[in-house]
Length: 162
Image 1 (cartoon, rainbow, N blue to C red):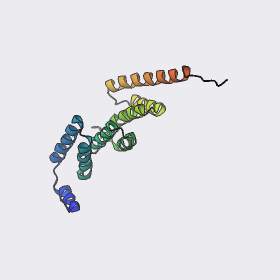
Image 2 (tube, one colour):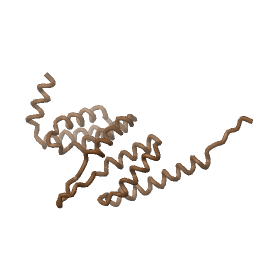
Image 3 (tube, one colour):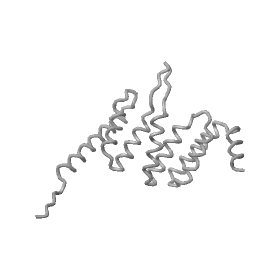
Image 4 (cartoon, rainbow, N blue to C red):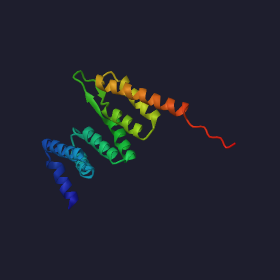
């Protein structure tokens, strides 16, 4: 029964309805109902045969899982977003959407994976299409990571058993 419903929904679902579903998922996420938001984001992924909302669904799923503290699952969707998400410019140039990379860097930072986080922030900085506000935030986070690493190395307590 569920398979038949999904098949019919897949055939007859309108793109505008899909965007409404994504808005509903985002509203649930904003209110803290992450389980409901995750269901809507997954449903949007299943129904998105044109792949128009796929990057937004990946980003929404990743943020919900991160807010729930499930960083491994969040990382999985952010890596998919980083791999699959491109924008097409008017001249036909494909550019990578850096929101996934930026969010992945933040997830790594929460997990205290400083090297991976710094690498992602540097990837965002290297991209010539990244907006300036993202670049400023990345520079701040890179500086913060460098300071954390400095303090962890310089001020690590030394214990002696003698």
